[in-house]
Length: 231
Ligand SMILES: [Zn+2]
Ligand SMILES: [Zn+2]
Image 1: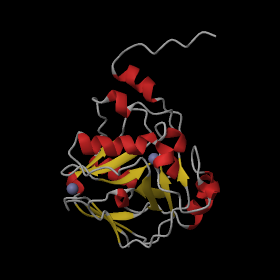
Image 2 (image 1 turned 180 degrees about the horizontal axis):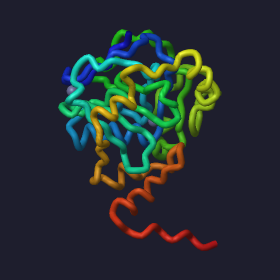
Image 3 (image 1 turned 120 degrees about the vertical axis):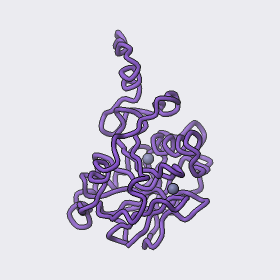
Image 4 (image 1 turned 135 degrees about the vertical axis):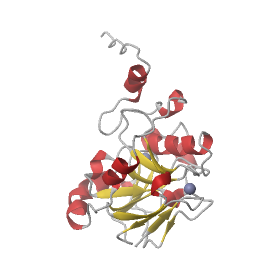
């Protein structure tokens, strides 16, 4: 049963499984912006050196071994897809949920931190893909370490092999445990949405579920929605 912990040791979650459902490397804007915010604005652990984040998916079934009262939930912006759970004491992000996970799987990127061992007792195999390279800043793709798997599993957008595998993952490995990301959200909410650092937090592309980071900015500040551009 894999253990996910924060840097300061206040929070620990134990997944029901030790074998992940999937593993990939995420180069998306959103993941890295969240890690950046937690590091720079909340004093969290250093984000990975590059925008390419180890991402390990488990069945959505875990227990909170400690620190339930110190867990917080955050979204990068109001219309964001991903809800990330973090330790309020050390700002480590420990687990995350996305609507596409169907309440069946959960994501941890705790293994991406280099200054502490955020993920333990997991039977990890190699990442099965690297995705969202279109989100990388200019020139950054060339700076990444070579992907260890087949080049066909490197994707500009969302990992197609994961999307293809999702129904089987939900069916065969997915779970919705007594404690899971949705129950956790109900326990620790409301969701924190940063109101500073708009440029960084809302600088990404539209989300997988169609959320527009810029639209939420206009909404949040009570400005009228931008006029559609005339042809
Ligand atoms: Zn902590
Ligand atoms: Zn990502």
